[in-house]
Image (cartoon, rainbow, N blue to C red; front, side, top):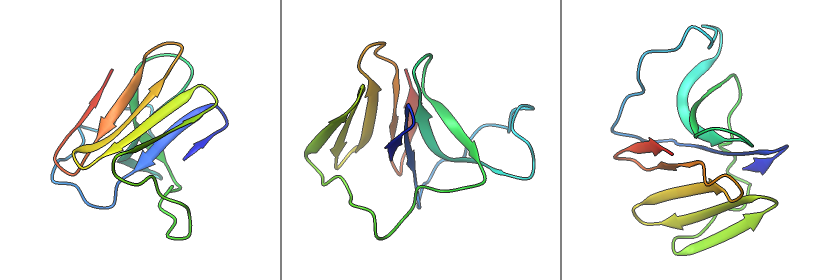
Length: 101
């Protein structure tokens, strides 16, 4: 999902666990169910009470990419990479791992 200055991807299945919940993420919401990147700084794990998992939403097919506003996301069988093109910050997420940059 790319909206309101943020690129975000939630993941349904994963073999990794997020690190400990930061104090800035309230216990009433989920933590680590996906990754997001905004206009500044590296990508981060999601702290939110909602989800981007919508079975009716269009998906980004393996081997394709999209550019919306200042975000570029590429889908590969190895995972999804989203980058804020002006800063170069972003994230990679897959069933096996995640990383921020």
